[in-house]
Image (cartoon, rainbow, N blue to C red; front, side, top):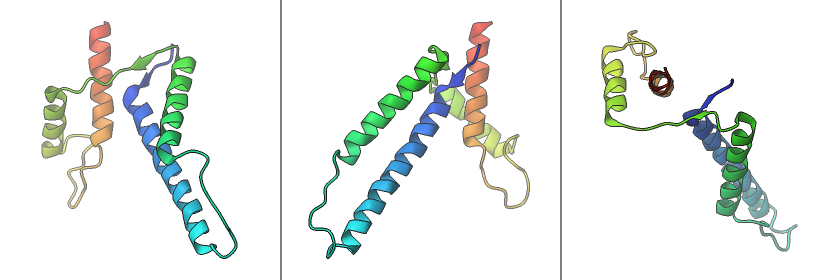
Length: 122
């Protein structure tokens, strides 16, 4: 049985939104820089509507493939407290090296979500 974290899906949706915004922006820039060649220009669908459609189709695709085996993210204060404690103490995945960043927040969030899910399961 295959599972996927809701956080992972949300991250992928964020990447797709960024890419879509970038593509819309590139098209608009091309129009602006070539106004002498192009008489009229408009998108078939607004960026906002396209984002909604993209999110819906992507989410439905994940649900269909995974048969709803998506591990939900349930935000609560305890999770944030644990992550902050790991950041302060430089506990893995946070590095204790000189000048190291606090990269690893999402990794820790994923890990704690998995642990919480499977604790309830078994």
